Amino acid sequence: MRAVVQRVSRAEVRVAGERVGAIGRGFLVLVGVRRGDGSREAAYMAEKILNLRLFPDEEGRLNRSIRESGGSLLVVSQFTLYGDARRGRRPSFSEAAPAAEAEPVFRELVERLAAGGVEVATGRYQAEMSVELVNEGPVTLLLDSDRLF
Image (cartoon, rainbow, N blue to C red; front, side):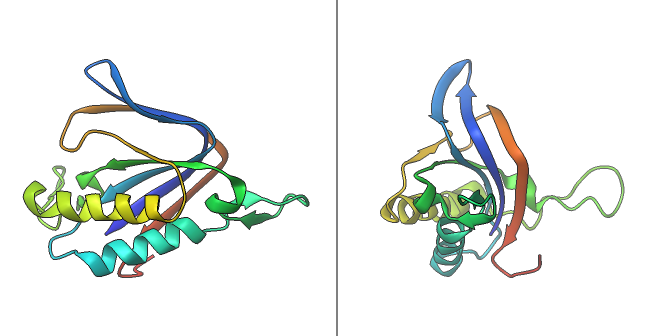
C-alpha cells in the first residue's frame, strides 16, 4: 500500500460537481492498494498516518500528530500511485490491485483511521473525482507499507 500525505488547511473532493467529502485542517491522504495487500498493510498504514508528527508544536517544530492537533483526514483512493513509468510513455498499472480486491482493503484502512479517534471523510471509490486542497508548509510525505521509501 502506498500513500501520499499532504498537510492541508482545507481539502475537498467532488464527483460530477457534487461535494462528497471535505475537511478543514488535517491531512489529505491519497491511497493506492497493490495486488496482495490486506489487513497487515492497512494496519501499518493507519498506525503510521495517525502517529506522523507533521504539525507544529508551540516552538514551530513538526512535533504533533493528527490526533494531537485535532485535525481531520480526507482519504481518497488513487490506483495511479502504483503506476510504473520507467519504460515508455504510457504507465503500467499492473501492480495496482483490481477494484474488487482493492476496495475492501481501502475500506479497512478508512475504518482503522476512524477508530483512531480522528474525523475521516472520503471520496467515492472508483469515481472520477476532482480534488481541491490548500497544502500547508508545503508538507508532503510519501509512505509505502513495504518501506521502500
